[in-house]
Amino acid sequence: MPASPDPGEYPAVPAVPAGPAGLSRGRHRVRPVPAAPPAAPPRPAPAHRRARPVPGPAPSRRARPDGTGGPGGPGGPGGRAPRRVLVAGLGFDRLTERQVINHVLGALSRGRGGWIATPNVDICQAAQRDPGLAELLGTASLVVPDGMPLLWAARLRGDPLPERVTGSSLIFSLSAAAARAGRSVYLLGGPPGVPELAADRLRQRYPDLIVAGCYAPPWGFERSREGVLAVRRRLAAARPDIVFVGLGCPKQERLIAAVGPYLPTAWYLGCGAAIPLAAGTVRRAPRWMQQAGLEWLFRLLSEPRRLFHRYVVADLPFAVRLLAGCAAERLRRR
Image (cartoon, rainbow, N blue to C red; front, top):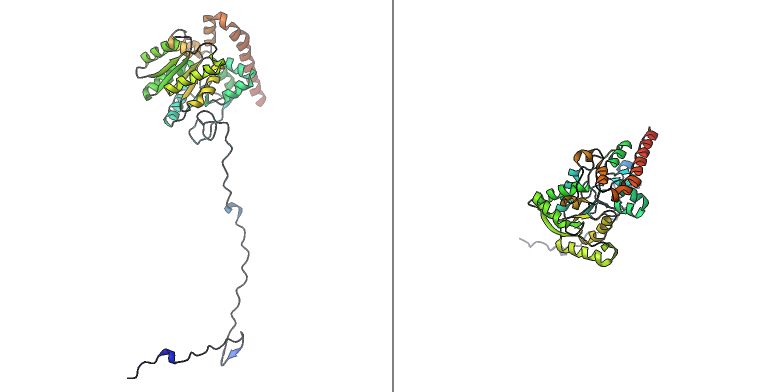
């Protein structure tokens, strides 16, 4: 059987060149292949399907100590802060005392601090005279009304606040909540020996309460850098969760602004005379007088020489003008 031929022995057959389209080769006609039509330009997508640009981060507002003045708010981290109720030139949060306590404990569990302002009629009047104080109060994490005239004014404007929330009540309710949650408190303010007496009475009332420390700063300490630094060092060493600052307005608010950033995980309460009240060295009005808006009268009768000008000459006319103005504003809107 002969060997299979080597393919290399056979010359390649040349390819027949393709002729122009439409010419015949033998009996068959080569039909032209039509060229593809030019692609139409893409049609724009409908407006409702167009991709929207991703917005960049919104410019943050001035941040409060716990961050709620920026992207977050009292509603929780990352949420928008609810609109405040404007009364006497200041914005107030719509919160009950229980909601304030829950907010503070929730923020502490997330490692976020802050501060609470409790303006009354006297503080509102001072804020109208001092724009710097009004701006400082506006940076507070929570602002709650310590005074029935402020609740009446908000109701007259048609934008009511839920209830009165006072520093004198919060020092007890926050201490009770701190005792249950294993949180510590610090008492800052009052005459010498009064913070220690208040701490003892609070511990008797709430046996599980942890008191991280007490300090009664000397008179005029806030006028020197060394005096403020001494407070800051004491707080840094004690590392409390909640600090009751009872120095009166505007001293306590300015001190909170000065020391707060150095202990940013703590909560500060500007509580006025709450520390002597907790110590029992100052009596508080009966509950019926508190609910009737007459606590100022009880204090006036207790300390007439010191409080007559403040309550009768300054605060009372201011409160009357405030209520009359709110009522007139509501009538104009009708």
